[in-house]
Image 1 (cartoon, rainbow, N blue to C red):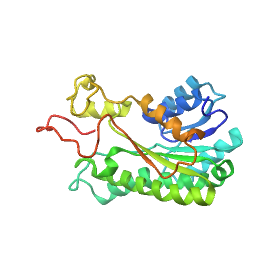
Image 2 (tube, one colour; image 1 turned 90 degrees about the vertical axis):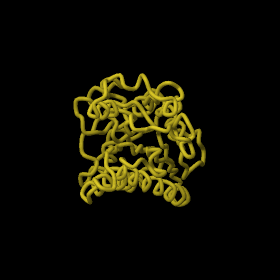
Image 3 (cartoon, helix red, strand yellow; image 1 turned 180 degrees about the vertical axis):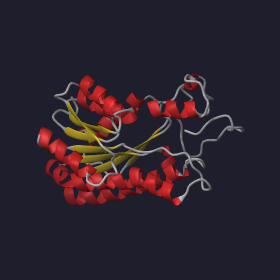
Length: 265
């Protein structure tokens, strides 16, 4: 039990990577606050974990006061707060020409500002427990794909925030801040996006080797397994670090000559 008796908030955990992380946290002995927008899915997640191990909060992360309500719920229910996982995010397909200011502001509000707000709300409690923050970024933080412009900008900003706070909060409050940048992961929402692109539901079964050397893309549970290390005491004083989780060297990899048939991650 690597997270025994820890209390952890996982945003965006009704589905996908967040759901996998929250589930793994409970398996490792933690109590979790499950959060998201999909009430029915969230109730299913909590039921599967057993209600003594998880509590559900359904609300838009960008609503005024949502971060504080999440923190208050964790402390009221379990008496403390050890860690937060900033996973909630919006993946919006857009390039320079299709990104208007309202879209850019919306994506940054959800993917960058909301994590900042939750860190601020949680900090007094995390300081008491010498706790930690785990931000869930993306490999697109490094520069991103042309048709993921707004998303890439928001994740790049999140990465800078992680490294900045990973230094200052650890020095001042003893709170570690780290980030994992997943690559291409087979989530429910990724399946929905590919369906909207006109692909069959089994699109992921036949992918070019350059994108999936293993013959498949990454499962959410594999990201969750990595998250446990950063949330546990095993990583010791490590803070302000970014870990890329992809099955090939992301920077410098030679692309295929024709990528026109492969939809964006």
